[in-house]
Length: 265
Ligand SMILES: NC(=O)C1=CN([C@@H]2O[C@H](COP(=O)(O)OP(=O)(O)OC[C@H]3O[C@@H](n4cnc5c(N)ncnc54)[C@H](OP(=O)(O)O)[C@@H]3O)[C@@H](O)[C@H]2O)C=CC1
Ligand SMILES: O=C(O)C1=N[C@H](C(=O)O)C[C@H](O)C1
Image (cartoon, rainbow, N blue to C red; front, side):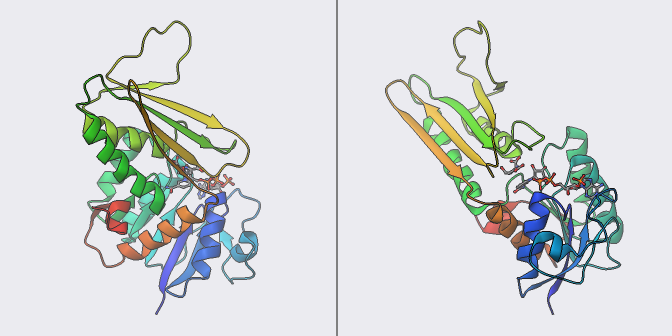
């Protein structure tokens, strides 16, 4: 029997790709496509909204009566509502929404005491593998005699609401831990003086319809390493999220991430 899946934020850029790819996956059955009740597309068939033909599931402001796993790609406030619903009904949840506050992240952690949760700012295999490479580089460069400066450049579409990306922040967290860095600097302007050795710099570029690129620079005196990972469509994120939703079914209560799903630990 296919696993019954609900998609929260189903009318959005990511939600539509999840509906499209989820409905083509024989291991899954899309039983719920939830979106903002104020979205004028609510009531229309979710498959038609996603451009893959009729599914028999409407885009709706409410959750289906039953589902076995769920994925959230929405906005922070709505993500908290999905979290409450899944906690109440004991539904495993993939949390992919970025830009959550510390308080909202605490709510995600609290929910992981009740249901299995997979939280990751990026669901793509290539990005998660690059995080491991960045961690390896950072560990190796920690003691380079004249220091290695870390700067993270991310590029996304003009509609993106949070900056820097959740992925850039995660790269920064991993590298800061590996190198013992403690300062996070967001852009530079004016007479800010020479760069300190303890900082990581973040730069957010917003243009056109870019589905997402991250470049991690390790700059030394005499040579530079750049790790770059880029998406050519949103499907890498959607495929990762669908894999995570399947992974959570039958798992013990707790907090998981994409390293667990992809076997990168
Ligand atoms: N972890 C990962 O791999 C990735 C994470 N993301 C993150 O996912 C999130 C969504 O991205 P994207 O799809 O581009 O954004 P969109 O704005 O295209 O989609 C968000 C959707 O959520 C809907 N929504 C708003 N309020 C509610 C509500 N109360 N209940 C249910 N749905 C609601 C929106 O509806 P409406 O527009 O009508 O308000 C919209 O359809 C972002 O935080 C982004 O950073 C994106 C890609 C990859
Ligand atoms: O909003 C997006 O598009 C993306 N958001 C995520 C993030 O903030 O890291 C992941 C991906 O980069 C696409």
